[in-house]
Image (cartoon, rainbow, N blue to C red):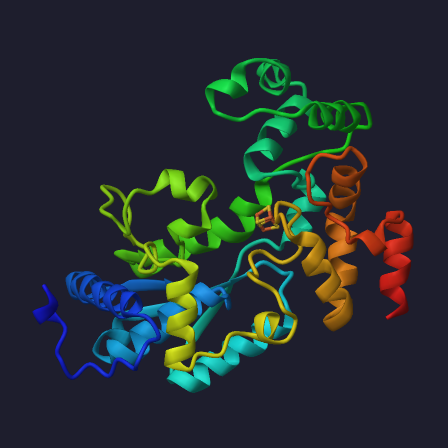
Length: 327
Ligand code: SF4
């Protein structure tokens, strides 16, 4: 297998042998999948995982760059640091990143409801609040156990509060703001390989859904996750040895991951809000306006071990917005 990667590939000196082995294995698979497909979509989020993929592709497989579509989905709420970073990536690697948009998260949330707790819980809370016959069972009965999804007592109290105050909940912005524009792009350009940055080491639902870095699909493009087997150490070693610079979200604001800006599903949202408040106050203000109620209610009903709002920020949403306005 290793013969497929020429000896002269300019791998730098990684700190760990394991990194070299992992990178070579990734390159072997990447070469094979890129050779076997004609129109490749590379999702570029401006985050660290997609940075590593863009670097791998552009440095080690320049012969395939022409058939790659680098695509960034703008949800309407994005870090200025991410936007600057996309420009930097284009300049550094000489590529064009297609910035596409669906409905903005602000529009979808205003018309469908706030996302809260997690995507799957938002979906079933939405059903419950709208009075679907099965909704109550899902929230309070055994229905969730089947799906390995249970609401805590505090989350059940939150559900009752949401329903009695007619507060709409929905995870629809994931579909309308992120998935649909990608699907449209895939359809429009006949993409046959969809390349994304998920890693098994991130855990969560994704780690349970995927079993391998490549999935051959009967319908639509095949899915390829080049970094699937990389743990955090391999990724950090790769970054250092290859001289990759992440966006200011990481390098200056100190974030560990970027994800979807301001999303209440993010377990580290308090830390990110703190960074936003310091470095991107207008974005902070926008997130408080859009997601503030979700943060406040999650904290008020003690629905998670980690708070949504930073300790020093535990005040009413009105006060938070006012504080954002002061910047
Ligand atoms: S991750 Fe969160 S903010 Fe982003 S689209 Fe999905 S629900 Fe909306």
